[in-house]
Length: 127
Image (cartoon, rainbow, N blue to C red):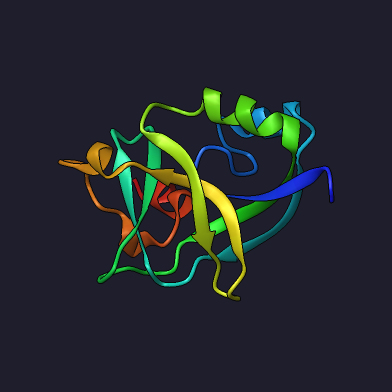
């Protein structure tokens, strides 16, 4: 058994963004950038962070970063995430299933959908 697990992140935890230091503080290591399978929708929560939700219909592939996170650091990262974000299983475009940051559907209500941008970073660049 390894001492790390793969975690897919899709927003402020990504390299160069506001909360990336939370990953670095627990000793996480960047593995790669990839996309999810095309079954996710992305929402902007008050333009502060995104929330990704898996859907049965109308989804797209969303850009994510996969990080190797020490087991002991996962709870610390989750506790520092904004309210309404949680850890769940994320399906990547190559068929791999990893843990990832997902949004609770309730926080997406009345928030703008930004799925068409394909990533939080691209959305921010077009604000």
